[in-house]
Length: 324
Image (cartoon, rainbow, N blue to C red; front, side, top):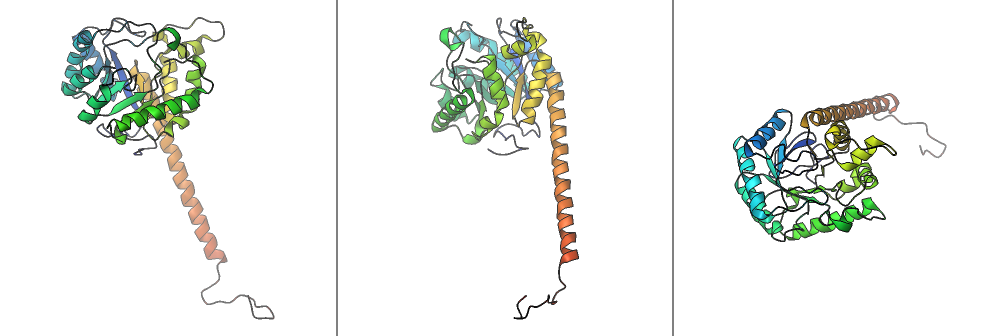
């Protein structure tokens, strides 16, 4: 992994000195979090610009809901929703990610100015995705995915969720590499909430170091998800609505940033932008403290050597046989 403050750098994208913030623009009527709010192109572009003004480093534009049980939109409709928004934001200088499982949408979004393809299926939903991204030499997010969130795939079954997610992501990254996408352009995502229960998501967040061992920058997308609702509700309580989980999202963002995530994907940007900047400031203070400790230790070692060392040419006491 090309290292930058321990979190990696993605070729083809700006280099941030902290965990980056990816703002979300859902151009859909049925997203679990904010469906319908940004469905109009003009409103969606304005919202993306507002997210940047609030601290987003890049903006993820999607035209298809991936919530459990969602009905897929057809290709023409997804293109109609996504491409004008990507083009509008890119023309304003925004670093744009396109959130799609369709190669045709990715290809046209890249042509319209998108800089990154964020495919929740990691290229599994459309066999043409990897060749399209490789041909464009674009960065690509490989998410852990076990299929569309319908039927038995809604609730995943795991014996060791961390080990299984790491192994399955590793296999998928190998396939993506074999398909021609450069290693320095790959981002991995544990797929929080996708075929996972709350305990699975929390275990993955507790072991982000295991995901780092894959050797690629890490995207954490926890924003407003069900597991946060479960945590906030407590035993037997009713989970708060998605838009009342932003403080919890910011807390996860700070933890992910502290653990070395390359980026966090969020709906409400301002609190997370503050959180990752505080995390970076604490990290910088820790690094400075370590440097100062090393300097003091080196100085003490040098002073000790001067105090106890024999003068040049001096000889110590000799024994009867003349050996020191």
